[in-house]
Length: 274
Image 1: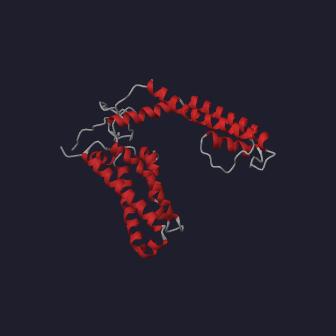
Image 2: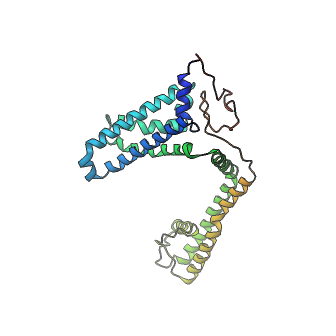
Image 3: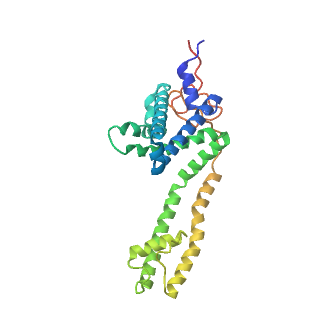
């Protein structure tokens, strides 16, 4: 029984639970970090003028390696479009093509900074089963509580509009920066969120009193979304997931005991073929 090279390539590239897959992802992350560092150094004129050739050659070398990796991901999956149009597939393409575009458009190599988005693959390397389950629970909790959070945000916007309008009436006669209702609403949002830029500040005693109340309200309001999501998480069942990727459709987040893909029904462990 000869090893199916596509299945082996898929296991190395897509899986982070195997030694080979983990090593591949670690090397990939090192290359991504190196590429980002090169772009940062290239933006320093003194460094670029002295080591310009080294930076250029190094960036092309990394780009070629990323290109090989991109096409390897395509050929190792039965349905390439599933990867090409996936989130990571689009990010991989966007982070690879800038150097090629630099042949036709000046300055596009700066778009290589998009490679920072590929660092999200670090979660595939570091996450253990329990962390995968927890991250999945957080996403489910956020999705389940989005209506409540939306209503809460709407309430905050209405509250800021009311408070901003009140502050405009109180402070409009003063030279304190409350020159319009929209500007006063901006101040209310900054104050309620406890950011406090300080570019606008009330001068009158009444205005300062209202501002004090808004600041105190801000501390209590910030905790509300956290409480909503936490309450939702408490009601969710934890599911033990892994980094297993379907060799047919590239679907991820399978249960540890799963034998078949929940999305397409293909076997997650295809047998070796001649």
